[in-house]
Length: 234
Image (cartoon, rainbow, N blue to C red; front, side, top):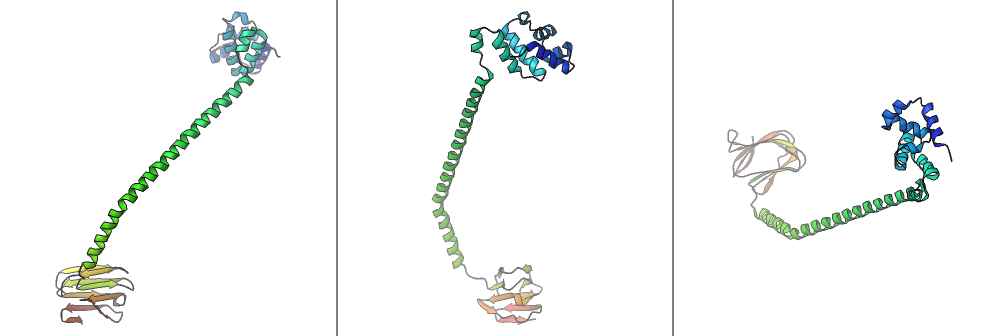
């Protein structure tokens, strides 16, 4: 047990707060604040106002407002009304129960979201599996078509490395068909029977004419003329 009014007055004095400033901060009339400090609670409209003002004023002074309300209940409130007002110790378990209920609800929502995600993913996988035969069928048709396609008369493969290549149709003054670097692993096919070819790195290339490989030989740049009668170095 402690003196409510004396404790409030000492806290206000320590902080050098006058009633005018306290009234502005708490929105409680100065005469009611003075009545709280003098424990003249009968000057306030009702016990409900007393408890509300006590809590606000004590909290403003840096004290525990609920502690002052509990002290007022134990000393000045009639038995029935006092019993109807739970103490701090009775409120805390209720708050913990509410927090536990909230946690359970959040966990349940999370589990529902996870199950929904699993079902959607499984449905998507099943849909993809259903479409797989059609994809395989189209791939098979493409492969079959590629195998049946006739090879180009002239094919230049970069098997050992890259090489800069120029290809004209007919002769050196003919239509330019290709000019650029053929990277390793790449093949350039050309339709026709007559070509003029310039190669910067013949050792990196394999040239096939009419299905037969031609040995370029050497590593120096060279120019070739291709015709149905054969291949001639220029």
